[in-house]
Image 1 (spheres, one colour):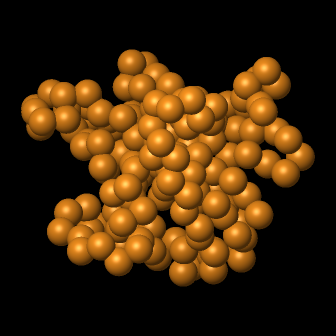
Image 2 (cartoon, rainbow, N blue to C red):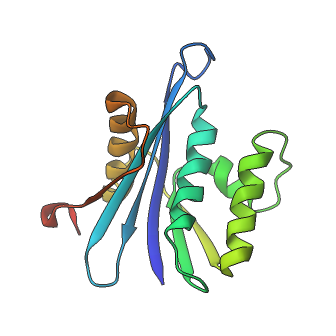
Length: 149
């Protein structure tokens, strides 16, 4: 079983001409190591970044793996728990395809945003960092031992 924290961020979410998005995900390994991945996308909405974090996280998953996704996005959880979907259908279809292709068992756990959850706060930090640094390539770093709880 693998635990992954995901988050998306967006500046100027209401203005499509200024909008900038970033996402991150943190993979917690059973050997008590952790990696963080983060990326910038110009013009993306917050919900698109939340979904992109999940999609890219699934790309890192092994086949037939059970994964727990910790997210502060009720939108993402709702997309996979039967809520009616009108937007971001292409991203959602890609995620569903990845789940099927890899035969992944996916579990969601909602965490409150900005409420002291250590890894959610770190995921938020790196999603915002992606926007600040405008990292168009997926960055991948080991978390410092002091950041692992």
